[in-house]
Image 1 (cartoon, one colour):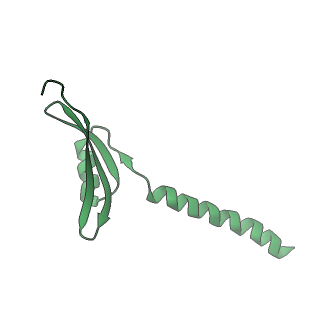
Image 2 (tube, one colour):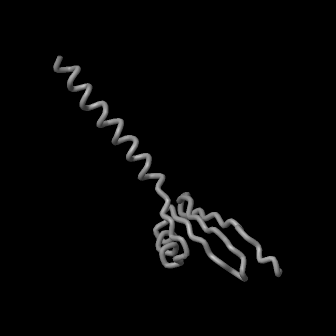
Amino acid sequence: MKKNTLYNVIFPILVILIIATGVVSNYEKNCYYSEDCFDQAFYECSKAKVTGYQNDNTFEYRVLKQKENSCIVNIKLIKVNPER
């Protein structure tokens, strides 16, 4: 009976810890429109995204991951200025 109780307590705790670790490690900070927030995430190479504008075009910048000594960033054009 004691082994069964131990299993019923420890197993759910381990499952919760594994799930929580996965959620935290995949967390991406949404900086919205804050360049300072994104710059800090880029400096730390931690996952983040920001929406930016250049020449009335809308871009989404994402810090994806660190690979060796580089920080991988994805830049996506969201909306093109119709006047250009």
